[in-house]
Length: 251
Image (cartoon, rainbow, N blue to C red):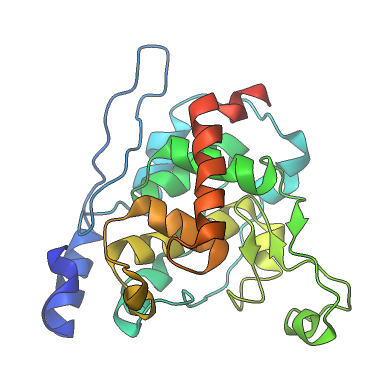
């Protein structure tokens, strides 16, 4: 387990603050690939800032394979939200980093959040295939429950999940309608949630065997809200299949 999740709150915050000022570790891609390939960084690793990641992503040309996303890909929203499920320490460290302050192609948005939150960019691509087929207009988890729709200020029936990574607004309160309007904001929030899980912040899952450093367990929990239950297993299997098949290359 990372040193960041051991010891006093003061020490933990100090270490996090130090980490967030450092530059991400990236590895060179193949000759015909991007200048940087963003790989998963272990818990406690330094994470880069918006500007560093933007510079590393935008240096590589990228054609838009989802033209319908154009408006959302160029929309930046100014909103502050907490990370659902993260404890106060990790919200203090990570929530202010959720800016959505990036514009680019769909490919570049997904690479930017992968860089910023220290996750393998191909896994992020595969997750976006599974969640939305890379289409910002995707709206899922439709319900006819008036009370649930009311959380979002909508009339039933309504969708609860929006954007490239399908942020569920009825769970991740404060994200809607921004996650439906801005590609970068929705993806930024989803990856901040994933990093909080990966760092060991979700203490409410510990009775189910949760611990820091299980990236795939956190991917499954994003979908099911549980730790390696059957829905999470099924979802992870679908993401892994899209990763192996590189399904996004068909778009």
